[in-house]
Image (cartoon, rainbow, N blue to C red; front, side, top):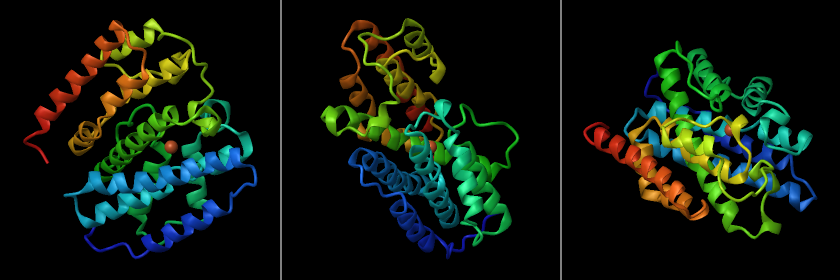
Length: 268
Ligand SMILES: [Fe+2]
């Protein structure tokens, strides 16, 4: 489906993204922090997407970056109009991103098949699961985008806790109360290797566990290597409550990561 030719429209798309971010500038520093967060996030997802795609065709690498530039465009109008990044309290930001892509005709430089693949990846990047029945290259693009996105959401999330409270981008914690301990059902799910549903959360600690459970949803071995390289598990250990039950959950997740890395050692 995809040739190895370079995509001539990537550079204009990057430039367009910069002007798109500028168009949301706010005089309110608190609002601007939330827009800045998504601008930086998008740039990092672009870098991560390229890194994960290393070894794939140059064409696929470029498409991965195109999808990354577009994936969170909806975050900007979402925050401007609803002052939250919580989709369940506002709109599905991924659907909104896909809408912006279409309305602004951002992908007209791509052949139809590639355009559709990117649009689907953007629209489904936040879905709980990857649906069955997608064309193989579309599915691969979607899986890569989801990996790249998670890698940088972890970075955003960890930095949030390292930032003094008054300087934090307010919407990054999704408004969960900072209660002590973790909910037993959430702990249980992660211990059993399951992904946690956002609707089951009661506290910020639960939200940390939900993000940790994303490791079970990582697709590419190259992403798993980056997780180990960046010490993502160690960073989560540092922000979670230091008790035995949590240590047990972390050990489970570490075991899973190591198993997958070992299995994937022979693969690309
Ligand atoms: Fe997103």
